[in-house]
Structure formats: C-alpha cells, structure tokens
Image (cartoon, rainbow, N blue to C red; front, side):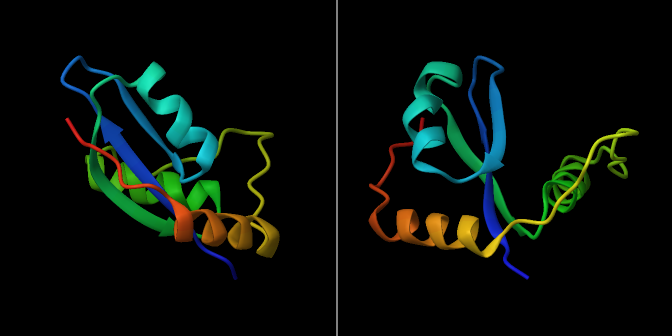
Length: 95
C-alpha cells in the first residue's frame, strides 16, 4: 500500500498547513503560511491515517472521519508522482 509523505508547517503568525508534499503545496505555502517552518512529517496510506497521526502528534485525540466522507487510500500513481517530485524538490528555507 503506497504511503505519502505529509508535512505540518507553522508560522509565528499563527498560520499552519498540513498535507501531502507536492510541488503545488511548496509553491503556494509562502502565500498561505508566510515565514513557515517545518514542524513534523508523517507517512500515511490515506488522508484518514494522516489525520490520525496529525491528531496524535498534536494531542487532539482520535480523528473521526465525518459521516458520508469517503476516505480512499492513496494510489500508486500518487506515490510515484510524489517520489519523483521529492527527487528534485529544491531545498527550502525555514523561518
């Protein structure tokens, strides 16, 4: 089962971002979470698993998937795309 890398970014201004690593997220992060720094990362096979790991790390308790919300697992295609991006991902400046 493919597992994607997810990152939690936080800024001193109180902005935060959590989700799978992608070129688009890296490009947009400075607009949405200015001066952000990487706080932690996790690998997960689905969004629900990623959110459970996030909640555990943050001390929020169990993550409950909202009723009627699908929770598909990540695909091999998504994992391959992320792996390819991670090979060429530019270094980032924190802070």
